[in-house]
Image: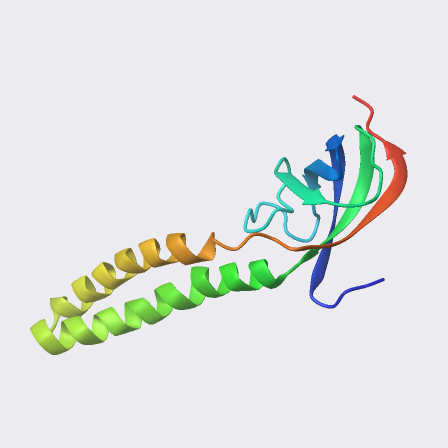
Length: 137
């Protein structure tokens, strides 16, 4: 079943015990070097399931892109809006160089806002499929 706004990522089962499965993700070709979501290679993801998985088994998980969209919004829109607001406030209060320093200050403050809100939400695993492969290594 294909989910709209989702990303498929391969992972290796490292532990499966009592319905709780832990995977190490291999990464995805769609978002190499991004790191915004758990599809970045090497990240560990845990989820609960009724299915039986064995250690070393390769699975294909479908992850919601909701977190990726949220992170993108915070990484690009919030600093840009902060820079414009900071420039306007600085220029209005201090003229000339005040606009530059206001923008710099507001962008620095937006960094903390981004760090607080963009990284909060955990990914949503929508579906897990067995691939029939085993990890060799």
